[in-house]
Image (cartoon, rainbow, N blue to C red; front, side, top):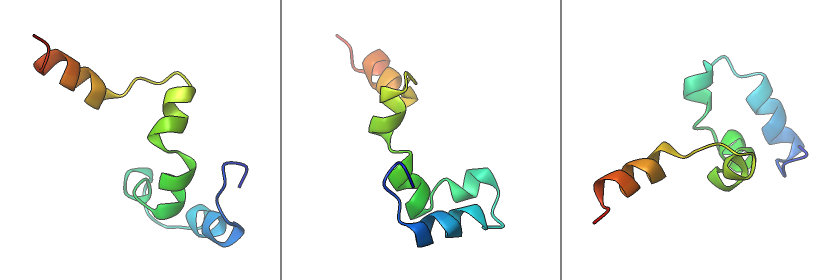
Length: 57
């Protein structure tokens, strides 16, 4: 909820029976752990590396 997710959505994410891989595509997780947030935490986006590698001239 500190990352801007509503209480109902956070609870739904917490009680889901989906495995982590499948629940990563739920709206609550997508909102809380956006690419911008993950980048701000120092994580590297594989997509950015792939584009840089394959489209550099």
